[in-house]
Image 1 (cartoon, rainbow, N blue to C red):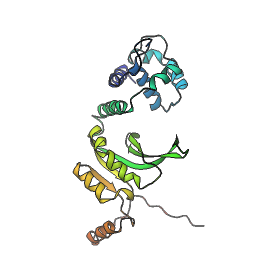
Image 2 (cartoon, rainbow, N blue to C red):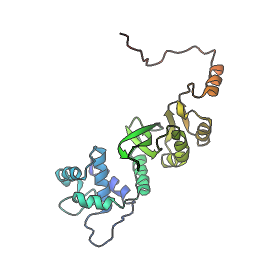
Image 3 (tube, rainbow, N blue to C red):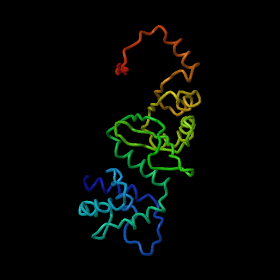
Image 4 (tube, rainbow, N blue to C red):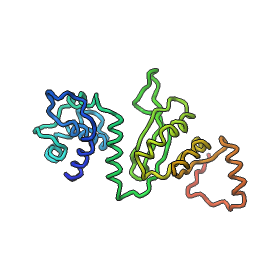
Length: 234
């Protein structure tokens, strides 16, 4: 990553409030957030590993990310600094960075919505946390995610609840895809109100809608699907 891109990243995260007290601060908060963010992009989730990676690349990272010291912050310094990070402000900064980075590349965005079980996050009762993810396929990146509890039926409700903020944060997002659980009239009407296109499956769990579609398209010649799944015999 070139220095100008690193500088743009630091500038975006400078909009996130520094929760630390001014006394004793040695490293810029925007630089710390940018450093950890770069590590997460490389699937580095342990602060000690982030520091080792930063040490190797410090000459390239130091100045663009706003650091002035000859060594990166230690893992405990990073952890303490991030403990007070505002998640809402980070989401806003992340959205600004992504919109800027993809402004000339993606055009209209298409994202998939789906509920997934978090592999590492656990709820208060010790059970895995269920999350609703909005995934930008072409970039292979999650735009946002929200906890939905353990009930699959909460997925459409969670999407309705957060739809306005999602489309406001990412105005280029103009198409959502998903499975049959999202093919519900209240959600579809809300998507239409926001001018967002959608492509959802319709199956027997929505009998009235399925019957109406079959009636409308009964004269159409079925087209062969692009992909077919066949059951192996024997």
